[in-house]
Image 1 (cartoon, helix red, strand yellow):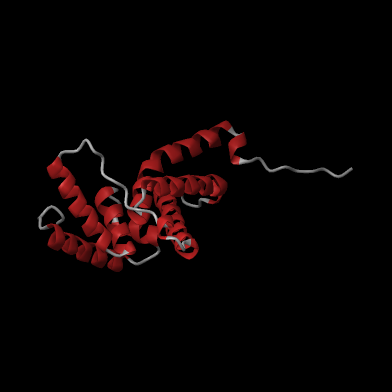
Image 2: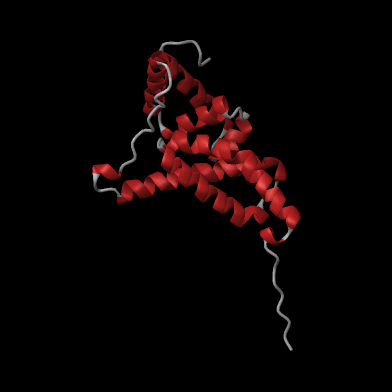
Length: 179
């Protein structure tokens, strides 16, 4: 008689399941912000985060360095967001299929809306990599090494793009808030 060995999946052990839930809970908001900065559409960013979390769940066992969980999740998010944009670009033939920028909430003050709109337009004018670096550094507060690892680039490139991106935002928005 031949024995069949079954590998236990991550979700079959309570400790692993709790650890995976904690990983997802701890990184879902950051993943959403990164996805939104790339795809610039709230519902599409939600889809990107959902696909990211599915990939995290599927490959959680392959994570080599538990210390780098956040960078690992954000790298997956970045890759899924870029892939999603490429897929949409390749499939889109009708202008209505292209995602529009997320609208600002109606309950914000008029001045705040104008400032946010100006900042959004300035961010949209930046290239995808620079925008991602700005979000990862200035919104998520990640160190340069983690950003470089997340985006698959070098630390000097991260620093250069961050400086240039901040200067471009300052030029367009006209404020000292980005230094």
